[in-house]
Each structure stands twice: as C-alpha cells, then as structure tokens.
Length: 68
Ligand code: SF4
Image 1 (tube, rainbow, N blue to C red):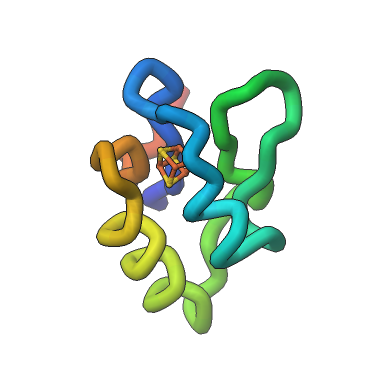
Image 2 (cartoon, protein in one colour):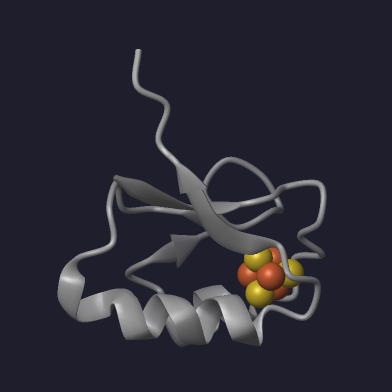
C-alpha cells in the first residue's frame, strides 16, 4: 500500500494543495501541509497526481508504507 505524504522540510506553506483539495490536505498541526486521509481512494488518485504536480517544491509524493 502506498501512502501520500508531504515532506515537511520541503513544504513552503504556499497552500496550493490545501486550496485545490481541502479534503485531502490541510494545515493541521503547524504551518506545513499534511495529508489528512490515511489512504487515497482509487477515484481520487488523479487528484493526488494533480496535487503532486502542482506543488511548487515537489514536497508531495507517495511513500511505501512500512510493514512492521
Ligand atoms: S503545494 Fe507543496 S509547498 Fe504548497 S502547501 Fe502543499 S505541500 Fe506545501
């Protein structure tokens, strides 16, 4: 399973992802954006790709979920 993540170190808090998809991204704990859903539903994968491509610093990407 792949999880969408925001690299906090790379996020410049521009708000693009949150503005485009406020149900997928949010400013929750601090000034950097976070993914606010556990997994991106199949029908939102295209939106996730749009967000990845729309992030000016490339801070959004998929990360392999670590299996304990
Ligand atoms: S689009 Fe990228 S830089 Fe802008 S708030 Fe989202 S993650 Fe941060």
